[in-house]
Amino acid sequence: MSQCRIPGSTGIFTQPIDDGTQVIRWSFAPGPVGSTGNSVGAMPLEDRFTNVLRRTLPKLPADIQEEFATMLSPAALLTIVGVLVVWAGSHYVGIGFIVDALMLIGGVLFLGWQVWSAASDFYSFLELTYIATTDQDLDRAATHLSNFIAVVGVAAFIAMLTKGAGKRINTSAIRARIIAKIATADDAGMAATHFQAILRVAMNPKQPRIVLFRKTNPQSVKYIERGFPPKPKEIKTKTNADSGIVTADDLGEATKVRETVAAGTGKKYYTVDRNRRTATNGDGETIDLSGADWPVETGQVIDPIAKKPLVGDYDLFDVFDPKVLAGTKPPNQGNLVLASSDGKFVDDFTNPWVNRAIDDLNAAIGSRRVMHGTHGAFDSIDNLKADEMVTAFFPDGRAVTMNKEALREFYQRIGRSTLDLSQFLPK
Image 1 (cartoon, rainbow, N blue to C red):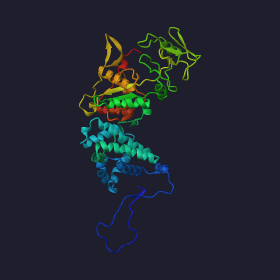
Image 2: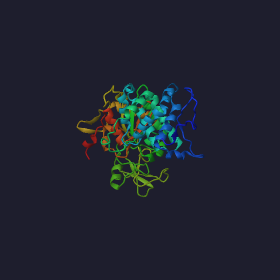
Image 3: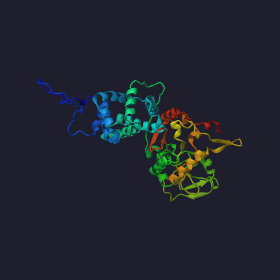
Image 4: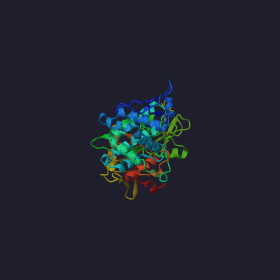
């Protein structure tokens, strides 16, 4: 490590030195006077990891700090940092890889589903250290590592790395970059208060759940916070990527929307006319939009009751019992849905377990934002867009955002399936 040295004597002493009177310490070489956090980006990766490990010590629970301190010796750091550098530099180390490494050493199986949440902290520690450019980045990485060690213990952390040193990464098995990190409300495309409400549902001690949502268009969030109506299942028109408002792209699509009846109202949806001052439904009824408090654009879909445009809903991807990750419930618990009745497809592929979760989620949010059953019961992970993100909420209060490849790996590791029932629907 180029920025570290072992200080020692600078002269020659002929007199003997009693045992225990000479101290050799590991210390950082001083940097230039007036240096700023920008120097972090220029640090060798080995030094960044060493720095983060040292920052981790005071963040740990007091009862394990002494145990962790013993691994900060030069010899121990040489091995541990070496493994961390290799793992951080690989595009093939995901949460599943970390869970595998923990399982190899044994002794953490009792953690069950918590090992997955802890693994996401370890992954965030690796990634943040790898891309760090400021002291704040290093400190955040240390926080994630301390969270991880607080769950699995110091002994498991060291064993995972020392046994992992000889573990080969199967790069031929994974061709795409796996992305998984601790999530924020912005990562999920949610209002901050709704994000916290969903976490509370996942954390309910009487009914803990693992809840996954597809990312909502971030442009919709400001309208969600203002209470604009969410897109219901009967509307197939997409949310405009730029505006965050559900918008028909052409006359044919607008015509279909105008003939669609809002569930439970008997009234048809409107779309904004070309003049952008009025909106019309399939019965020829119009409403005046001259006082609209949003940027009006042609084709926007207007709710017949609220007289406001539809915006993105919270698209539930999956919900299941955390005992699935602990291995005490079948991998596909809660995955059986009713798809047809009397020879016809039903409007919503769901089941009582999912419906109870939806009711709890909407009650916690304070309004109906989760509009239908799980996406995983309707479509496969394989059919997600390559850049799509899904956020998983865990019962320990953590949320993890995963891209398509990380989500696929997660489901493969736990043996859970998604259903591709969409292929049987009429086009």
